[in-house]
Length: 110
Image (cartoon, rainbow, N blue to C red; front, side):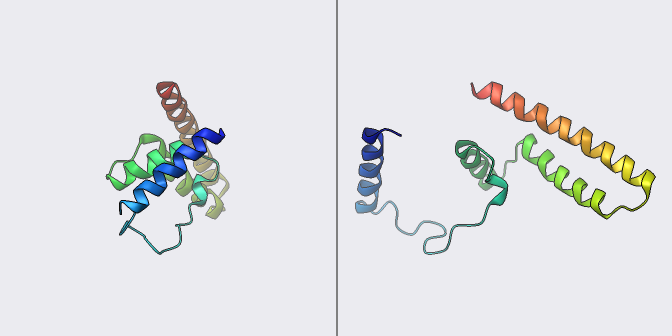
């Protein structure tokens, strides 16, 4: 980030603070929530996903990601070889759908 941009951002934050626009915000005084799932997501994407979630909208990409997490947990619990193989095939299908959805979003955002 360039020095000029950083200074502009700081001035805007200071102005908003002095105008009281940063008072009584949701979560004020509380620690930031732990979001480990955002560790490998672009910050702009993560912010967009959070805004959509707060508005009650969940992109297909995130729905599939949640389904993948559930499927991974299922695979970890299964001991029957046949059932585990079927669960792993479903996980592979979900991973493919996730990658297609993510690539489609990335192409759309270009």
